[in-house]
Image (cartoon, rainbow, N blue to C red):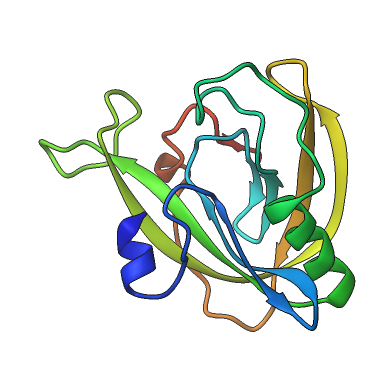
Length: 162
């Protein structure tokens, strides 16, 4: 994700939610759906994004309930203020063949997917039986369509419903 920082799309090196202060409120600027959390792709225009925190696959620790703070709070505030959020998707490629693969994913390539609005959020029990925030995000109409096939979703934590 360092490349995203260099080009100015996403300023966090490890966190999937980037945010900044605007008029005293924390607002989301971008998210990266990289496969480390259980995101759900309902269609090419709808993403259900799993919030930040509590995932032992990211930080070696005991699983915890997610809190409405930092990036999660920023996404909630962006929903309330109706501010767009950049979405970047990470796709795994086989290093040796430079082709998409569902096994031995070694390289991640990032694709800018466009601007989305957060339409809703809720909490539910996640994979580790802890509370996780889920954010229903919809791509803003009028943007150029991106043609990415189901095969791009090779990370086992990303579910494609479509």
